[in-house]
Image (cartoon, rainbow, N blue to C red; front, side, top):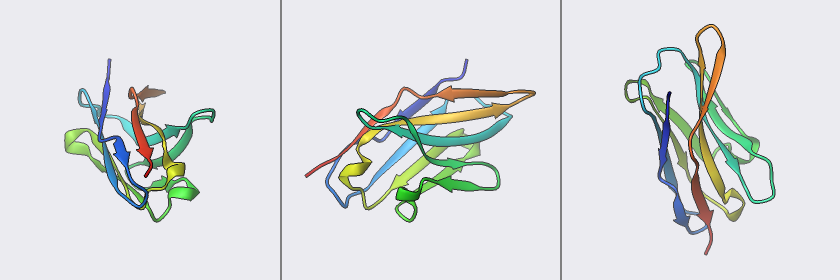
Length: 117
């Protein structure tokens, strides 16, 4: 069973930055994509950013502020978040989709990001 371990959340002031990391507990040789979702209180979980071997995808409100990257050798995905604002406050979840005959989705436990003065 693959586990995704997240780190890097916390409290930051508006305009500040945070970097989230997510590492898979073992090598996965058929990763289709890795990404980050977030869920604010009372709202549905939404895609923030995702990365495949040849593309990246961002939710409109984070374009130009967030950057997703991936280190395949370390089974790790990162989310650099700059120019944070209170609307970015949420629990952020790491996501991994593998494709080995069929799609299998894995989730991290979530890390809290709070943007407040």
